[in-house]
Length: 212
Image (cartoon, rainbow, N blue to C red):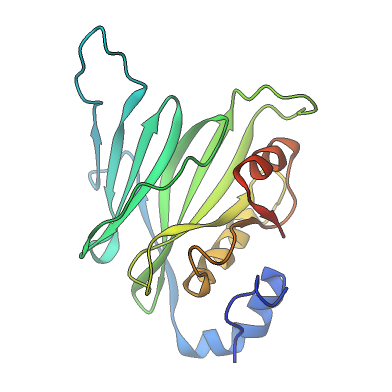
């Protein structure tokens, strides 16, 4: 039997996957579906019109349709992204800012499905523009994993994988995404997985992610 979630039992993600692999291989089919941000599945919206004397930092949004009626919306505000997820039951609240740095998402969303049911989503962000003492890498490249709604709870951030620091970052992000159904939003704490460059370590500390 697989543990409820590797964070609560102090297991590494790799150990969790190895221990559970035989069960998962028999129990479910794990696949990916991709949605390109510049495809017909995504709609870009301009920011709302405001009076000239009422400037706004809102920069619009991109709403993408994923598999099985799921949606993911990237809200842009002052050069930074905020995620929002929805399913056939409605759209959830907008989640908090992910980075202090300016960020650029894309080029595609990777939806992870278990037996055809979407459970998580991976999205790459390139970040930069951060000025902080001790930060040598001014630009970062990170894969962000979110748990989707409809799994007995809301959507939430599960964690990050630093794509510059880990040669197997894509596979590691998929492993984290496949563990997302056991992640309890509001109880389990988001974390980084694997090695991190200085800028990602700084960002993770400021956002409140644990290191794994």
